[in-house]
Length: 187
Image (cartoon, rainbow, N blue to C red):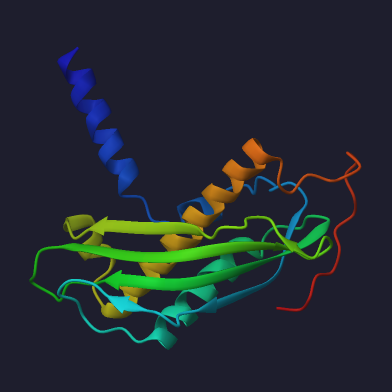
């Protein structure tokens, strides 16, 4: 019994260490009628938190936009949705200082056909990664850490969209029938 508990704890620890893009290599589970039209990533109120390396807004917006496009560009639903993302705050402790990597962003989903937001209040997405052996080996450079956090925001956004699909019925075809994919606005 004791060995089983130790193995279970190890598996949970390993699951927490998986890269945010590990699931991109597997089969794609559709997200209802969702197809990404475009993503708009901004950082007008970017704040550096705690003792951190400096990362400019342009670097964050480019990294998050790339991660969003990579993750959501895979879906071929029948309706166009646009994602608005505002990068709000980050923490990237300098090398040799203990701490956690963190990135916070606010997300809004726009339904192109209905010409309205699906969420009136922005959704706060927060990604926190401990600077332990797995992270430091996987993200040795500043650019690697930025990419890791940006990919984490994209993955957490997908998790939230899937939750909203299940609980609020987002991304379901309005007539109940599956429609053919459309060509959304070129990204």
